[in-house]
Image (cartoon, rainbow, N blue to C red; front, side, top):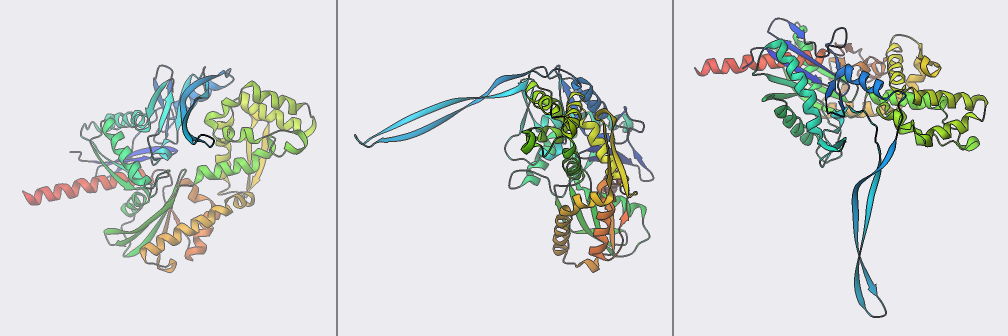
Length: 466
């Protein structure tokens, strides 16, 4: 059995791993292609030989392989639909059965060099059996995630030298999903993924609870208090209310929503960038920007717009001259240069800078975009989401049988919790300022501490039994 605690924050956007030996917390270098390597993009790229690349290298390889390449879409039969119909002949009173079969085809990118998988955690709770087509082969979500988890597992083993790892993995309060019980479905799939990845011992801990564990581990001088953990990251908002009594704590309630920083980034893209790419030109120039929206918002598929049918529409708009021509040229550069990833990065960086500045710039030289955005504009975009935040806080308080005045400490973690308007909203609800706690590594640290404590408790039970 492992004599150290090992924690894995397997996030929608990024992944972090940590170990705790009872004295110090160490973060494991799981992404060798970044300077520190301790925070890895949760990404997998499979080429046509099914050779995997993970983390920041996966993103770089996907962008390189798809920038400026020719897109050839071909028809592929994806199945057939059979419809049985009954028909009554009124003249002869004879009921006839008729059967119609239709072949269903779809367009595929026949020259696609590789498939990028990103934000796969958001599919874990979907009902049915989600499968992904990779060059003619069908892969279940468990198979895709196994490749990622096996890589991470091997990196942990390099550091720990421990073949008998008990891994503590973070999980959101509420998985997103299409079924009636996405949490049960998601956890079953994660257990299968861990088994396939060679991890026989695994425990799941709610991410906001793990953040609280790391905080309490570093702050041991507080007495009895009620703590609300506000974990607002990339994929989800997770809340947890705990009651702390000296060295121990108990969870009073949890709640959450499947919307967070990635949703805000896309809203900024939609509200601020779309009008600079041709949105709104339908009436005067017959340019249907809605045809471009989905593939622009999902940067992994922006390259699919590099087809004649889309480029011809952009070229037609360029002939209009004036501002429409400028928009069309910018949109064409974005598509030809596969620059949506750079644009999304610039949007995210601007959102971060607005936490400490009144204004900043979304600057992407590759598409001649230089746009100033103010904190006030960001707040207008976020405003509708604040209502949902209020609702999920009220739910957590009701489940804990507390009112806002009975919460002694608000603990914030996750990058999106740094947004000033979000912090102001929390202060308005609770009548006190919140505390920021290790936004990107706190959960992994708490999971490692939880793992170590679990080992110590198990060892104590064994010693008492002997």
